Image (cartoon, rainbow, N blue to C red):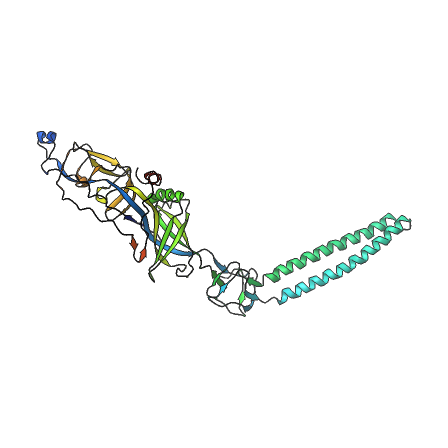
Length: 408
């Protein structure tokens, strides 16, 4: 499933409105008037600088940190199931017991063989001791002594093989008892006692899922990656997850950024970890995710209508005092409510917010008289559905904002 992220920005103070360029509708350039050409009429908007919060919103998916499908390592018949569906288990807890009668019998046989060979070895060692004394007294030959010595070594090797056999049978016996390798909640149990199970069986005996803590996976566009990485380098980033099923909001922390961008859609995978103490977030569930990508004291903003996308990236058209159009490359950081947070354009620059589709760099334009816009009141702390987000911390310096990706 491809995720197309939506971007959200809470602009904390008025962006624009206080500075506005107004000129008469009939103020055309003398050069164009002399040639009899009518200059294109455009509206201008100021590039402003003000405190802002960059928050990126998209859809996410709750995933378990640990999820295990339990299957036997050896074939066998289920003797007993020691847990119930939905039960919480701890590491090492017995889950399923397979019939181990054959393994117990094999273990008893191996131990008996060990005892017999141990007795034979004890006799051979005593015989070797007597043979060594007789050899010193020249009553037996060296060949006879070597024969006894070889018997001792052979029985010792048999004893080692018996011990190895016991270890092997004990491993097989241990595999008949299936224990929980991780802590979590038991899922659906597909079989009952008496059923024959095999390592290659398609449905697992049961599943164990760790539901607290959990992770939330989500995708962002690759052009948002520099903003997130630069903000993460300064401090851990907070992620909010809105559970639309019950309207609850949960706070977590960004824990992972994938090492590569998906070339098929231009998105990058991120993960956040949530304590999920109340288990309101359930693995497999879809949630609304908002990543708090930092607060900026001097964020540079301009109207979305002033943005233009070309083959070489995004840019805007600026207009100087001589009414000539200039192409201004920029980097878009985030956008919301018809305002864009950008990097690469200086505050105070007049940009074309209407009529820019009909102009070219170097062209002289006529500036239409725009109606004055009243300054907006400061926006309250942003709310995503019923998930309240804290107000921006405007204490960051302009230098810190620039280092985090905001315009200088």
